Amino acid sequence: MAEIIQKDGTWAFDGDALRLTPGRDKNVSLLRKELGELNVPLGALAGVSLEQGKKSGRLRLRLRDGADPLLHATGGRLTEPHDPYQLIVEADRYGVAEYFVDEVRSALLLDQVPAGPVDAYLLPGPSVPLSVSAGDGTAGFDGERIRLEWNWKTEDAKAAAGARTLPLADITGVEWHPAAGLENGHLRFTVRHAPTKTPPKYDPNAVELWGFKKDPLMALVAAAVQARLPHPARAAAAHPVDARPELPSPAVASAEDDHDALLRRLRELGELHRAGVLTDDEFALAKQAILKRM
Image: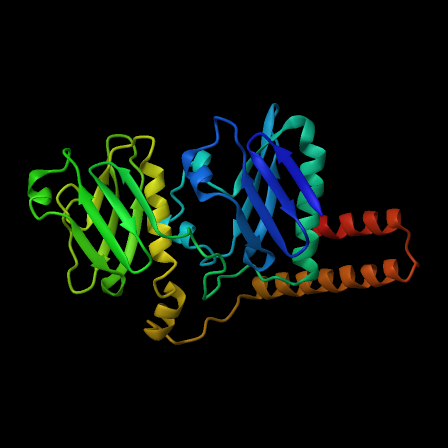
């Protein structure tokens, strides 16, 4: 078990999965608090890193493409305080963070977890039912239907149609954009047979966001819906654009060969260690040397 406890949260790794628990510090974002504890299976990870600064650093998890509906629905647009896959680490805990990174990386190597994309979500997404009020409306989702209701700040042309109920079966896509600079953000649903280029301010299938504190919570609704839509990789496979196989370049093939050789060497070292041929210190030094070459 590897564990690191910080004001920003607690990360624990048991060899099979990582448990990410947000902290109770006032600086922890509403989104992370509402999202709650995440259990990330080892197979969903593409990598882990520690970025060190003078006063503090960050642990970062990199998930495999398509593994998490939250990351897919937000398109990588979650800003730093709201990203559940980052943890602020105080400088005096760098040693613990480095050990944590080594343990996760070793498990990835030993289990030969590929870093490539997946064709099914490996995390379940936010639980339902849930409802969020922000911007010009309230978005609710019960697992089968999306409910959009408007407030006094909604544009008259959009509010005139009244509240909307969208069956999940009619939804083909969902996206969340945060407000940035002078540009407002939005939560938008794409409805089957009713595509629209209308700005979110007037779109009855979108909630406009203005950059206030609760805006990121709309990402939870987006993720909950995304988790229940067909996985994009399977949808792409059902409608391939070009079926011709892509051959790896010689440089890529060489890198993969080197990676496989290092994995075999790591397994051999593990067997020697278990057999008593290598001491704990000898095994640790040899493992570190291999990890640095990865």
